[in-house]
Amino acid sequence: MKVILTQDVSKLGKSGEMKSVADGYATNYLIPNKLAVPAAGGAYRAWQHDIASREEKRNRERGEAEVTANRISSTTLTMGVKVGEGGKLYGSITAKEIAEALGRRGIEVDRHKIELEEPLKSLGTYKVAIKVYQGMTPEVTVVVEPKG
Image (cartoon, rainbow, N blue to C red):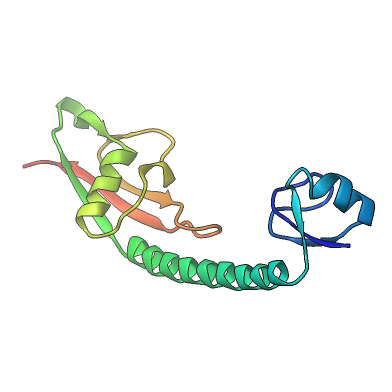
C-alpha cells in the first residue's frame, strides 16, 4: 500500500515522503497513529502540489540568499571605537554590533548567523563569515579603527 508520511517515522522516512509499505503496517499502525495517510485520490494530488511548491520556495530562497551573499562579500564595515593606551579598545565589537551595522546598510542578518568566535578587541582588519544559506557563507570585511 502506498502512503504519504505526515510525520518523520524512524527507519521508514521523513514527513512528506511517499512510501510503499505492507497493508497491515499501514492500516494497523501508520494511519491510526496519524503518521501517514493513504496515497489515493486527493491526498496524492495534494502531495504532488506540495512537493512542487516546496521546491519553488527553496529555489526562491536560494536566489535571495545569493543576492544577499554578493552584497555581504562586497561590503566593508568601518567601526570607529574609543581607544585607550597601547591600542586597546574600550569594550569590544560583537556579532550584534556587526548585524546592526549591516542592517544600517540594508542587509538584514540574524546576529546568530555571524560566525564570530570571540568579540573583536583590537584595532585592525578582520574577515567575518556569515551563514546566509546552506553551503553559503560570504565574508564581510570589518575595519576597526580609532574614533576621531
